[in-house]
Image 1 (tube, helix red, strand yellow):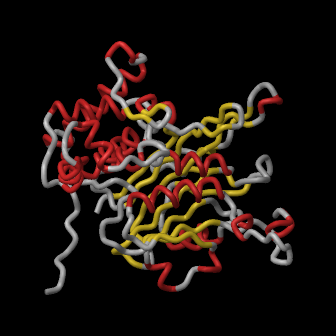
Image 2 (spheres, helix red, strand yellow):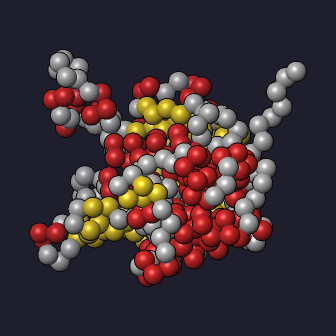
Length: 351
């Protein structure tokens, strides 16, 4: 008998599995979590497949345990007592508990209920991440094929963002064919899969070729003499007002350099195959690209950002957000797009 179609687990089941496998760097086993919850391993498995739903007492344990990385110390797992929690940890616990109850009870907004997570591809169609290629004059000597220690990854632009996103998508879709490649590696078949373009026009020809097929985009990326190492964003408002430019911000203290990049996240039907998706994670510079990726991979903020996308864009077939990406002492800070200050521009197109 031929196997039936794979059943997609309900939202709570997927969320519980995500907490166990992706919340922290160390992936917990069902056995270890079962001990913590005082249930059998088969019960944890049933929670993660949707065959059973935890009661409030178990959801409270989930929220309490996963609210803080301090729950894992020296390889030991434990549930912190109330008086051990820091204020921000207590806030995270209460927020997580509320989220888990809403998922179980179907209390999310109608749009959020019907919208899967951005990096969840339940149709089993392959996923291709496309990164730009650094020009030969700018690469490390280790990126030269003649070098005994040749490392091809060193030819990839936006490598931080690509590695982050590749690992996350593999974890969310363990049975799916997920690969990263450069523009000249892509075959006709690759172009028809779910495609994620990581990085901008400068070193990623795929970005330009896809954008040329997408009509009437309000956000364009253009060269600017003031930013020779990237392309700035220009928005042409629908109300006919003058175009607006969005550029990275420099610190008043020259020693600190750039303190804010601009990130761009957009999703469309794939122009080569309307049954699949095209997603663009981009920025003026590499930190903007990383911010566009971390927005939906960082465990601390991805759920809040996903909820904002679900509430705002719901059933839109195409949408995009332009946002600030803070930089603190050279480190890229994950943007919280539910914060109005961080959003620069957004648009969507209904079916």
